[in-house]
Amino acid sequence: MSATDVPAQPPLVSGADVEAAAELLAGVVRHTPLWHSRGLADRVGGPVWLKCENLQRTGSFKIRGAYTRIARLTDAERARGVVAASAGNHAQGVALAAGLLGCSATVFMPQTAPLPKVAATRSYGAEIRMLGQSLVEPLVAAAEHAERTGSVFIHPFDHRDVIAGQGTVGLEVLDQCPDVATVVVCTGGGGLVSGVAAAVKARRPDVRVVAVQAEGAAAFPGSLSAGRPVPLSSMATMADGIAVAAPGDLTLAHVRGLVDEVRTVGEEDLSRALLFCLERAKLVVEPAGVAAVAALLADPAAFAPPVVAVVSGGNIDPVLLLKVVQHGMAAAGRYLSLRLQVPDRPGSLAAVLAELAAVGANVLEVEHERTAARLHVGEVEVFVVVETRGPDHAGEVVSALTRAGYAVTRE
Image (cartoon, rainbow, N blue to C red; front, top):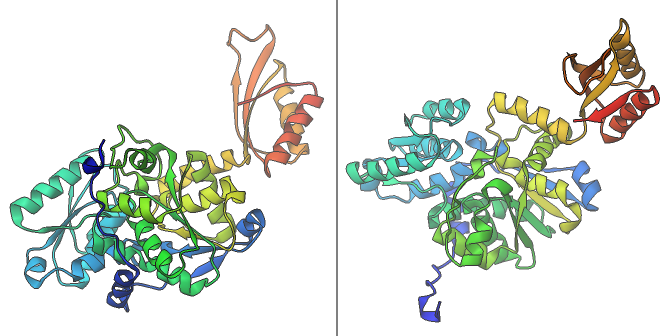
């Protein structure tokens, strides 16, 4: 590619743009709290703060960008209404912002959208239309709706007003933690990290800004390498709020120009972080919202303190919460699955359970298997799931069973 073939970089949102958005949002959004996390500080080796956007109106930061965008429409544009496509958080932000500004809103959502997010969006006054199994179909339908009706499409991330509104999170971080050295931000399409980086770098260019993506939906690394948005061929992550197939031209330019590093976290990292927030910070957080915390837990030495991790949203389906907590406990070594071969005679199972009780393991599940070809005559296999106090205790459980003469296999 020659120099003349390189696409021109769009102008970036400035610190002044974010300051103007903050004035517009005064009295509309909450200045969410900054909570110190001793558990993370002990790992990082210095102060770590959580910026709790899960406590924002609508349960996420999205109201900031949505309100800024809709408020800057002309009266004639607002009279035609707005339309959006979203799996949940952007939908709620657009619905509430439109209601506050006296504007009708239509939101297209995938049929897989979490029910609490659908119900909340409807409660804010938006008309909901459900279709498709991913965000692809709703995005197409929203664009067609805008073309047909003249309503204004509110992009979830790739618009200057949206980025400026999201950037007000960064202004609050600087005010609340003046000596911050590193800001860590969960990232899907990049609207939030773009705005935060614009705000932070304008005042404190020395502060390191780190974007964190889900490993199964990390569009930025490939797009940054290619120099243009490159859609992912597939995505697989529980963090639906940051499952975006490609960044926009504008957010890619911001991340390339202002963000110091893009990191990824796996599903176990997300589960472990969600469980950490529940147990240690007493915060209900969705998987997308906990990505920054997941990065800190996965590699604490990589972040110079003082650190602020943006907890971007807390709108989690209770059913998913139950599954993620269970997965997080397994990832943290709190659930232990074992297979043992024991003699097929009365009292054998009771003896296994007695050994587990003696070492303080709480039995959650027990199964017998007598017909497997791998078993000898007169032998039975016992599958048992126990709750432990963590990896060290799990090791004690296995050692105790081994000393008792059982052949133990960890699942």
